[in-house]
Length: 75
Length: 250
Image 1 (tube, chains in turn blue, cyan):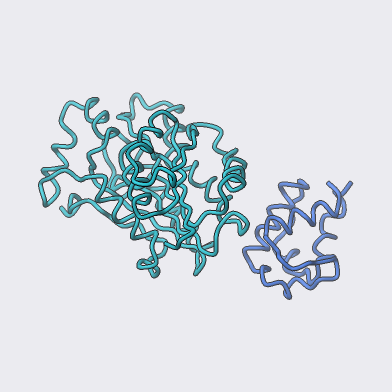
Image 2 (tube, chains in turn yellow, orange):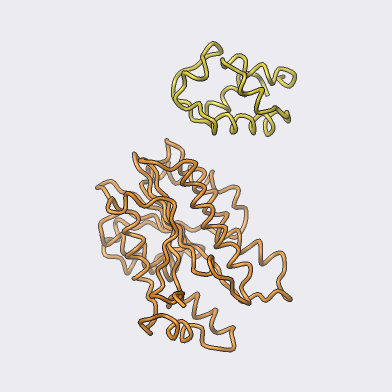
C-alpha cells in the first residue's frame, strides 16, 4: 500500500470531513479523538501489518508524523 | 419520525419483525423489509396499508455476515440514506449442551447478533444515514436469564445487549440512538415451532408466568419499537427494555 492510499484509508475510516494534507495538525481536526487514534492504530495493523504503540500515535502532532510511523511498509 | 423516514427492518417476514414492518408502514414510513424468503415478504407487503411504501429485499443472514456492509451500501444506492434500522431477525432452536454443535452456535450468532453488527457498522457512516439514525435491536428476556436447552440463543442475545450499550457509547449522540427491547414469550411462528420441539407447551408456560395470563403479541412489541424509533424516546440511549407482561418479575 502506498503512503497516499494509507492516508485515504484513515480519512475514509475515521470519516474526516476537512480537506487535509501532511501538514495538517491532528488536534485541529474535529474528528481526531481518542477513538480515532485507536482506530488508526488498528489500521496500521490491518493495512500495513505494523504494530504501532498508542504512545507513538499520541506523540504525533501532524498527519506527516502519523504517516511516518508506517514508512518502513509503504510501497 | 419525519416525512422522509426510511427504515430498514430485517426478519420482516414473520413474527415481531413483520409486526414492526407493518406498523411502521401504517404510520406512513417507507420500509425496506428484509428476509430470507421473498415470497413470504411479498405476502407481508400484500397485508400492508401502503404497499407503495413497502419494499422487499431477500437476504440470508446465516452466513457471510462480514459481507453485509457492501450489501448495505447497495441498499443506500437503491433507496437513499436511512433514518432507522430495526434488527428483528432471529433464530431459536432447542439445543441442549450435549447435542450442541459448532455450526448451530455460529448460525445463532450470525443471525441474532453478527448480522446486525455488520449492518450497523456500515449504516452509522455519515453518507449512509440521514441527519438522525435510530436503531432498535430485538433482544429477548433470555439475554438476562439463562435457560436450559437454549444456551447459544441466550448467549447471542446477551451479547446483543452488550453491543447496544457499547455502540451507544462509541457512536451514539444527538444524531444516533441505539436501544433494544427484550420481549418475553411472544406468540410468533418461531415460538410455535420452538414449542413443537419441547415436551411442554412453551407459550402456555409463558401465559402462566406473565401477570396478564395471556399471550404476548408481536404487535405489543412493535408498539415499543416504534416508540424507540420516535422523537418521544429521545432521552433513552443504549438501553435494553424488557417488554414481557411481567413474565420475569418473579
